[in-house]
Amino acid sequence: MNIGVITYKKYDENVLLNAHFNVDELFRIILHDKDFVRFEIFNREKKLLASTYYPNVDGKGLYIHPVKVFRDEELKWIDYYAFRSPSTIRHYKVTWKVDGAVFGTRKKATEYANLVNKRVSCRIEPFIDRSTYRRSQN
Image 1 (cartoon, one colour):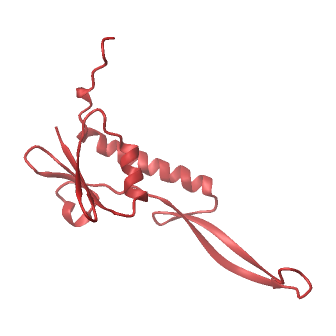
Image 2 (cartoon, helix red, strand yellow; image 1 turned 90 degrees about the vertical axis):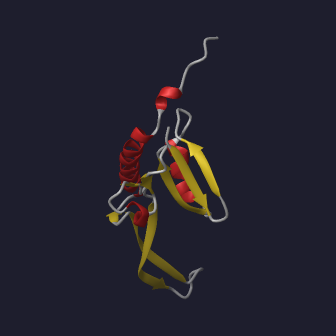
Image 3 (cartoon, helix red, strand yellow; image 1 turned 135 degrees about the vertical axis):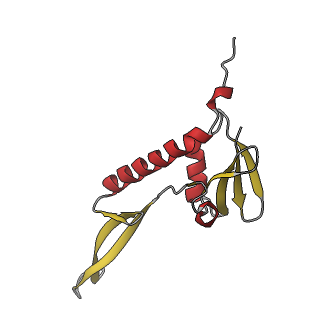
């Protein structure tokens, strides 16, 4: 059975990659946890199979890179009218970025991010041993 190591700023956490491992929870930690540093998957002989830290992987394993949607605002122009409250109105052009790709709507950017993250989770899935799950006979 493979072992996952989640490295935070102050400590490491070992995770068994068995039937109870949740890839969506891992992506939530990778994308949103401020203390997260890296995630690595090792086999029983302590050989690196996958990592979120690219210099460790470099041709030896799988590079895990989930993506996130970012909002990008560009100021286009400012309207000024002295007798209006507020007197200035700013007009922005909003674009959504996902790993270098630019989208006009948030919906399309989110769909693309979900597609990329699904591909990454499909690449991680062979390292997870799902055969350890047994239903109870109640």
